[in-house]
Image (cartoon, rainbow, N blue to C red; front, side, top):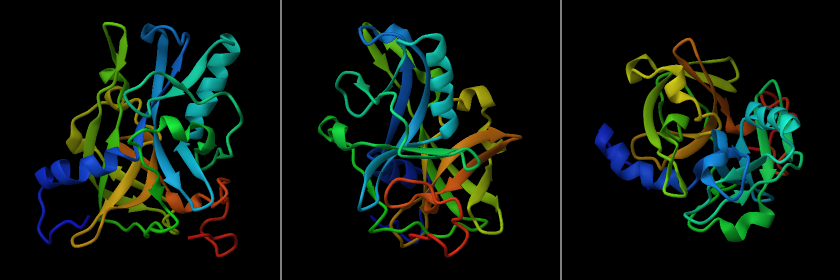
Amino acid sequence: MCLPQKFSLDDLKLVVEPEVRQFCGPLYFTRSLETASGVINNGSFGLVDTGSKKMLVTCLHVWNEFQKARRQNPELEMCVCLDSGPFVVLGAEKPLGEDEKLDIATFDMEQLLAACGERKFYPLNQKPPRKVERGDVLFVVGFPGHFRHVKDIHLCYGRQAFVMVVADCNDDGLKFVSNITNLNLTADELAGISGSPCFLVRKNFPIQLVGFVTKVAMNLLHFIHARCLNRDGTINKQPGTTKGQQW
């Protein structure tokens, strides 16, 4: 879907959000699979198809926090909201790929494809991520934890769409940031969007997945570029070089 040559913020929310929404969702840690009130924390994820793997992508710090909490409570589970159905347990198996410096982790979704419902996997193999430059417009749908609530016996999540501009990126474009001062939101109000996929918005071009939210710090939202993902789900630790480059 291409945006017209001239587009507004309303255009983005009405046209782009439904498309982006298919590729993302919330994940959470729960003490009980029997009740929604057992949830203690949450993050966000993106769904990606590399041509070789259909996988879930989130931040490594989300996985590390789950592991830490699970040592205190061995019954804790990490689950994902893939559709309007019941809890879907992602499990506690080691990620396909992980990298602490890049703060990213991938999980094989092969066994959970039947539970994905209307969710889709972004075809990264067909639409390689473009280089991000200062001034580019980004669109993100995240699932802040302060929107999480229990209604009757059901766990409910609210989502929030963010439109922002790339303020800066490092020399190889692998990491980039956006100033979020104009969003008038605190770090606590943004907690839970780590792992959200971000999409590049350009006039007369389809939206394209280019990265994932990693953290909020000093009024900046930080991202890691999607080209660090290898086709087999592992992480390319030298994505700024031609060695091992896949996209």
